[in-house]
Length: 74
Image 1 (tube, rainbow, N blue to C red):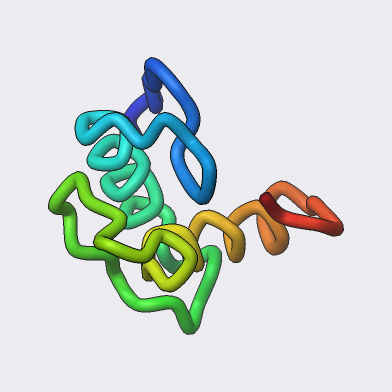
Image 2 (tube, rainbow, N blue to C red; image 1 turned 90 degrees about the horizontal axis):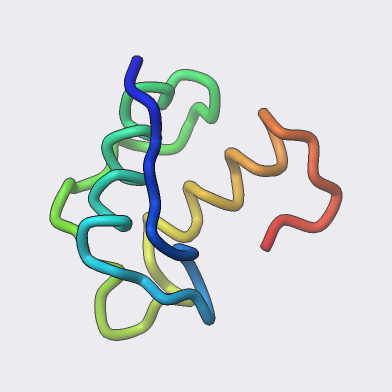
């Protein structure tokens, strides 16, 4: 498992630096079984044109809810 190093936030309203997004995508893919049935993410460093519809953002929210235990993932 890798340590996740970010220079800013990733997600809706985040800084969304390409390398940060890529690091999050890689980290989630390494732990993807924890948030089943979410499919592996494309590791491209992008949230797409509409981050609110991004598979990466959906995976971040699922991880925050299922693994971290946040009631209101952000």
